Length: 361
Figure (cartoon, rainbow, N blue to C red):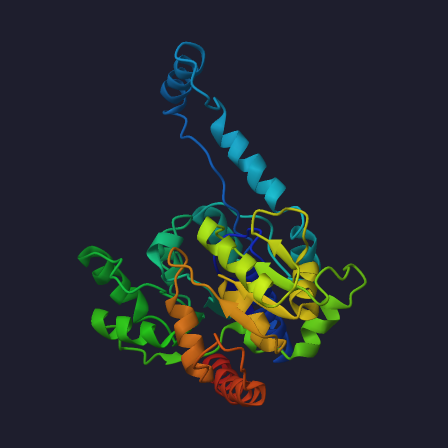
């Protein structure tokens, strides 16, 4: 079966790229021909706004001496390209993808190639605030023609406790939801959200994030690729996406209590590859993170960890993961790894069964 995958725009997020990699691998193992829709964020000004916007910026910069960039959009696009330099080789090598697309018009053109199925997910693709690149409706496949191709949502996330959709959104999305052949979500809380919206024409179920579907050996192949160095042996690896003084204080206090050095990394660090990021987790003695996938790979590699929370990016997905794996407390460093590994194995079977049933003719 020829399958197109759609999720959030390509960026330098390690977990985001690894979940693309994992879902592609899983579908390939199942015998399918998979391609990822290479969506890129692009900043631009409509032609009719350029004269006004540029003149306004020139006045602010040269008359009022404000520190602003006149060609702001060009600068932003260059910054995005720079931030992705270290992860792009991984994406190009391991993830079969389309040419870069930046609009619905370009996506529609690619879809004319004719796919047997379209899968949206994983990640927070049904969280409205995360989908400004295409608009939430297009993450429900509004751009697709009714040509008989399967529409599947796999482990989609809505990681929020509040209703982001207005009444108009709900009416439109209800019609689009009804066109799906199969839906799975990543968090138990999302099932409640779907019921609130009345989206039950397709019964959704909870499945694992794609990264949890692959064996550890798949990731060790990347760790041992020859392109990594050991930076965290006998150290704490602190992977903190949104660094604050409070979070850094936690890292330093934990390092002191464990009489250990720590290695700190954030998402803005542009000199770390995806393979190196995995290596950092695998060889560390302890992980401190505010990242969902930082937590996922700590669990996969059976590394003691501390999740320090991240309200801005969403904590429901972590709470749901802990609930699914029956992880009760990570503060005492007493981890029942065999229990968690067995639970992952059990949930993998359920997730593979969902994909098999969703894709069967």
